[in-house]
Image (cartoon, rainbow, N blue to C red):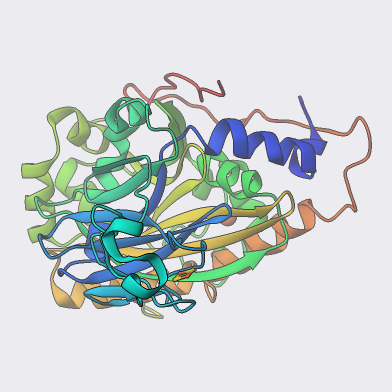
Amino acid sequence: MIPAHIYNDKELFELEKERLFSRSWLFVAHESEVPEAGDYVVRRVLEDSFIISRDEQGQVRTLFNMCLHRGMQVCRAVMGHASHFRCPYHGWSYRNDGRLVGLPFHKEAYGGEEGFKKKGQTLLPAPSLATYNGLIFISMDPDAEPLEEFLGDFKFYLDYYTKQSADGIELRGPQRWRVKANWKIGAENFAGDMYHTPQTHTSVVEIGLFREPKAEKRKDGTTYWAGNGGGTTYKLPEGGLEERLRYVGYPDEMIARMKEQWTQEQLDVVGKDGFMISAASLFPNMSFVHNWPRVEEGSDEVLPFISIRVWQPISENETEVLSWFAVDKNAPEEYKALSYTAYLMCFGSGGMFEQDDVEELGLADQHGGWPDGAATVAQQPYGHAGERAERRGTFDLR
Ligand code: FES
Ligand SMILES: [Fe+2]
């Protein structure tokens, strides 16, 4: 049992910021969101704003969106394309690699380079930056452990979502909205709450969005912990690798690329053990979904989609959700379009699963403060461990 107040405790939230968010690797963007030199997106991490830009040399930069002069936000747009950023307050300007290049009245106000050295000044970079399969992570800890070590065995599962071919994924979005709920509720839901599906999402099953009409079947699968992540899988019907991938709606040309891309062990989780990844969370606040609804009424055909999300904490009881659609770069165009439809039907601000979940996540947190001594059951009841999808490791709360 864990005390329920952890979902609504201001003091604890301060500690989480200090001890969890300041030390963990945090997802901010995917390389496909800034494909060309000059492209940028702006992302918030707790109280800080970051410009994630691709500089003229093609290198990805993650810069504090904070002017060196008086700390104003240099870039006010959410995304765009620019060679320079000019601070709206006094007009200092920076190249898209962060270098300070323009300082109005440098001579008159500061006495030129002698009085204030402009050369060598740069917007502050995030203390640590690393990427995995094009996913850009930053850490506030300059001595953060290597990203790959942080991900650990979760990389094994991450590849199913982000590396279905050699070129990886491209992202669309994000949609953003706020929920009146603590960030942990969403992250935990995606990390292993298969238990809620038959109840919370009954109506989605009843309208025939899925091929398996029985709510019972929708919870057949297993959960796993791996490195700093954990997630859920669905059990697939009998069959070999190709049959099972076709069953969830992948076209043959995508299956051929997965076979080239994934290790034998990764292929065996699907082909031999019969598990297909579904929802997952990477500590602390990044989540994934993979599902395969029917996209056309009356048809038995299903089509998979992948979504990535971040539960960005605003306060102890408010969270900004960022939800992206992700798809393999090499997927056929028609597949991409239908997969996007599948995503929008299920998740994102208008998605049917999303409506159900937000209703629950919000209400779970609306008790005007949890009563003293209230507790919630942390353990998920489903854990029919497969041969390979076993529970390994635990979250490192440090
Ligand atoms: S605060 Fe940016 S130029 Fe003064
Ligand atoms: Fe859900």
